[in-house]
Length: 582
Image (cartoon, rainbow, N blue to C red; front, side, top):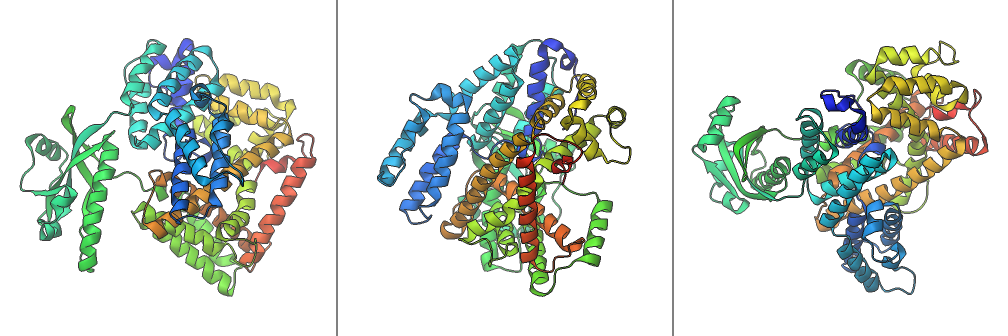
């Protein structure tokens, strides 16, 4: 989260809620946002479609029928939470979900199809835009936040790329013309609207592709001897020229909503040609550059765009100095022995393969295999998904609240290190306490309320960070609030883990994939990183676990103690404030 004050309208009090909306969109579409604050993988519309597809897969014996209950649970929860759906539904939400031992699968599917027809995504976006304007005008930041999440998730699931949404957000709210009144937001809604365009994309590809030149038109590809004049001009201005072993390749007939989505779609065609070529020539690989030039039907000027970030790269990273220190400490004090060490090393290999592989399906498979490998098979009974969920859930839940506090502290420092330090010096806390501890005491202890109010005042036009601080302070008013928040997080993570596992099964057993796989990769990678980090803590520290079974059992005990302490506490004090830290 970063404060961007680049326009005069950002400081107009009458447009404060609009600026909050802009800041929230900036966070939603940013690649490195904490998962809690990202758009949901699916919202009500697409959960309904997922349930329908799942029933079809069950009927085709591709997926076990037990999976349906979890998807219907998530759909039921989402329908109740979604403010847009409440306007769209023609009957109570529960009327659209038929379930029970005496209900036929076909009847459940038909009723879901009725719901899917009711929740038309284009109509959903229209209503969402109306509600957003009303909420921005009436001053409810909580509702603006909720609607922004619904809006972002719907656009992404309809096929608009996050890169495009991020660029349009920057262009309109932070670096475009001055906004005079709320009605101007219609121009932004139009800029990200789900409008289909035709694209031609130009890649520089290794000349190996000429060996299969007669086959590639099937994939919409054509080797060019020269570029169109307007494309040639862009290439020249950017110094983009093929060398002696490269050629220009044009990909036509791409129809989608934005340039970045078009590039991804076009590159999949190149992927197919490359992989087919590898089938017959294992030692030779068709490759292409990251840069490409793209033309859009309604825009006269071609644009140079680059390969988007790999989904595995969208995670928290240590600085090189800190990473090397962590690695050196691990090598010196790693307690794992024998087969446990071998398995951990195998997980490290799988993580590396997933990070370096460009194909989303392969990334997801490698991350999931890594999770399966890491979680001991002898404990946490049940099938694979039950073992993995039961194994890593204590780690994810124990980390959840501390991660929110740590992100808040990091955002405050990023906002203004000097002001943050000055404000924290005013709280009643020993000087030797760290930043996270002081931020936690600031938001958790009632005696620091006057200091907290001074922070709110200092944050000025940073509406999102003030709102985030207020939300967390409200959550820390009593431990029971944390228990409820953790319980909801547990439910969401369990749903997401099952979704990741179902997607893994679809890739393996049917060869199919899903449109939102990048979101699943980001979540799965985050779960794996958290789990591996905790394993290192238990095997390299004073506990010195020598097996993975010991490490996971230690994590389970720690979480049980943590949750028990939270449930037995009436308020936060010096004695139990550690519950908010990792």
